[in-house]
Image (tube, rainbow, N blue to C red):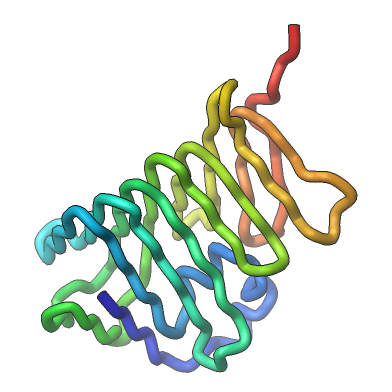
Length: 172
């Protein structure tokens, strides 16, 4: 399924436009693929995809690309009434407001690699919550940093780019 958000970029968005999740929820083209099931609910304003879900986003100018994979993805969108088959063209109000990804979350954009069990993105707050387990902790590798971060739960404030470890990994 392809979602086009062809509205012009706003100048004020440029401060966090280089952040991967901002890229995935911003203007441009977003391609979703899955191998089990997909449900689009206009009433609930959400898309639910199951089975090896891939979400690829390319900015309008083609400069930024980011990819996320997961087992299950739920995307709450403010406007699904423009959906025509497997193609959605965004009007003035189309916006991904919330993303929940469950199981084997992987995000990469060439400058950042994230692995987590689950991901929860809140658009209004511009916050991403990443969750892991003791066997598979959250892994964040900002390629310009000396070493990757690992924790059980991490909060990512997209508006500032700040990372906060909410639950560290405790060793015995």
